[in-house]
Length: 275
Image (spheres, rainbow, N blue to C red):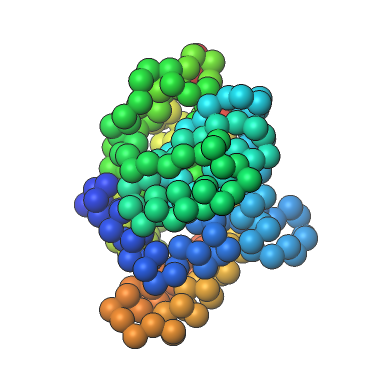
């Protein structure tokens, strides 16, 4: 990762707790990740974010009865959607206490009740035995981890041989330079991002952790509209607040919009396998 912030699991949890208190983590309908638009269609952002979840599920090659790990589970929506649709069991982990509480409450009233559970845990030091899971996914969570290689090694350890890992994450198609560097640095600071990889850096970290890369595809143009949707939602939330969080959320909206417009901003879908 070419640029880094002083990110820690605690600082990531704290910023998401701030966003949760302000309602920002439900601004896009519950999911806390980009949406996926198929060609020229114009579905709502809430449907588009579910499509991204379904894309992840498709790459996992799921079978009923499998046990999966959701690394950075957000509010729990992807885990509950996948558990409900594919008759699998999902354990979601997160470093935000607020998001874990929200996900657990959702699970209690979900059709996937009993097949999804959530707990506070650090992906760089997972509290699970070797080979505990048939597969894993990480939707926009690796970028928050100051030692991605350590997290990928831990996921590798707890996924059985032959199991799959699907990662979706931001990427720099080319490194940001000059005045554009301010946009990237702002993203790292406001969102507590440890670093945004280039595609080659994604490949290198997977290899370092022992994963066999099956596919890496940049779908940046299919998700680009998400940044504008998120910025608009964040600005609406900021305007309704009379707290210190209003300024933080407004700044987050401006940076999100600028980053999303930049042609170097990509988005990768990665499928890997534990040999």
